[in-house]
Image (cartoon, rainbow, N blue to C red; front, side, top):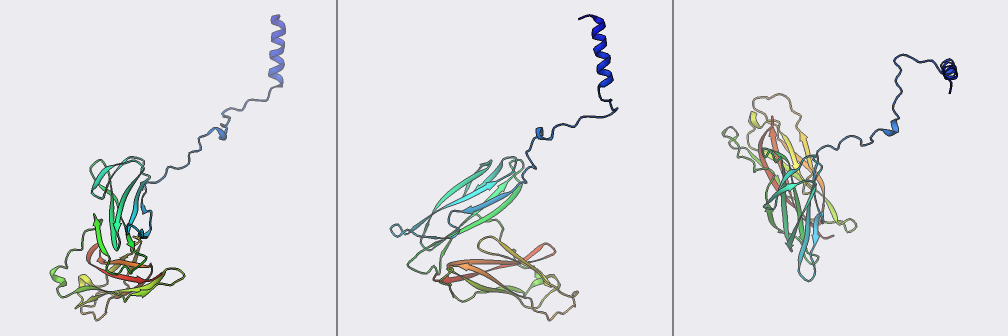
Length: 265
C-alpha cells in the first residue's frame, strides 16, 4: 500500500476515535476474580453416633458407639483421645463397645503440634441403655478428663461447703421420652469475702453450659445472705451427671456433681 494512503487512514482514525482521558484505568472484569470467600475460622467439634443414650442389642446386651472429632484448623493439630495420640488434619473416629448400664465418657484434647499448647478440650458421654430395665446406678467409665477436679477451699474458707441436692427419680413423658428436672446447689457455712457473691457455671450431660452471675451489694463484713441456685433442664431417659462449679475473679472455688435419674420413656 502506498505510504500516502497509509498516512491518510492514520489521520482519519485519530480524528474519529474517542478522546483519551489521562489517568483512566479500565476496571478488570469482576467475574474473573476468585470467589473463595473468607477463610473458615479455626473450630473444634466432637459428637457421637448415639447422642447421650444408646439402646443395647437384645442378643449381645452391648452398645456399639462411634465417637467423632473434627477440626477446621488450617494447620494440623494433635488429638489425644482414649489413650491414643495422633496428628489430626480434618476428622477422626473412635469406636467403643459399652456394657449394658455403662456410661462411657471420652475427653478429646486438641493440641498445637508446636509446643503442645491446648487449643480445645471437649468431653462426650454415652449411656448404654437397656430396654428391659432402668439405668439407675449406671457404672461410669472415663477415658481422660478435660478439667481437673476443683482444689479444696483454702483455709480462709474453712467451714464452707458447696453442695448439690440430688433430685428424686423422675418419670419420663411417654410422648417425648424425656423429663424436665430441677437441680439445686448451695453454699453452706459462714460466708467469707473470698466466697462472697460467686459466679456459678453448670455443665450438662450434653456438654452445654449455663453460667449465672450473682447480683450482690459490696461486701458487708458479716453477710447473712444465702447463695442458692436452682436450674431446670430436659433430660432423656437414663442416668445423668450434672456438674456445677463456683468461681470468683477467675479463680475456681469448688465443684459439686449431682446425679439425675429419668425413668421410663
